[in-house]
Image (cartoon, rainbow, N blue to C red; front, side, top):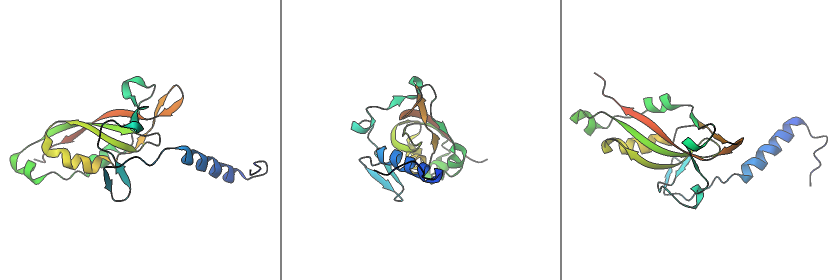
Length: 150
């Protein structure tokens, strides 16, 4: 046991971060691994999300911090451009306690955009959800728009 009295504040903060990080479950069962940074299980339910809440049930739902940046990075599918297809995709996302996208759930909207959404939605970053003063995993629905430049 390390005596905590007399440790500099920076070391205490580092120790607290290590304890929090080690207690967080950060290794989900993965179906898809992207760029060695994001690990996404595309199934909607499994044992890691049983304690996840719905955004309507929490005191403060996760807030997306970079939606416009990710939205701007979308590459419009050539086939959709040629056919003149535009649309709104609603994607259900599991946001973990650290604010990262843990899973991609159901999507609605033109299927022609689903592959691009799956590639880019993992880059979304959120302020985590809060329930009764605790940070919790939360399922949220995020609208994404594909509009042709005219």
